[in-house]
Image 1: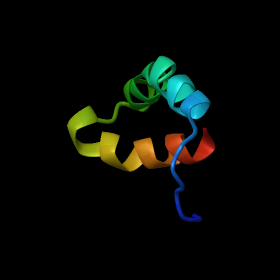
Image 2: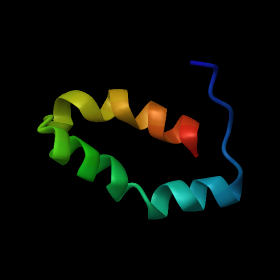
Image 3: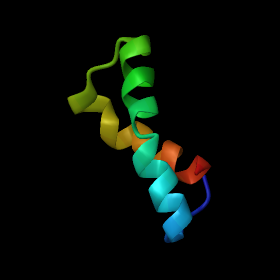
Length: 48
């Protein structure tokens, strides 16, 4: 994975408004949020 860069204001807004996608993904996969959120969020932010 390439390095993360600072998000633009538009990207930040989009990421905040759609953060529930991460929680739905974890729930769908049956993964505990407290164990996997920190892992999955970086992929999510990279995709934003």
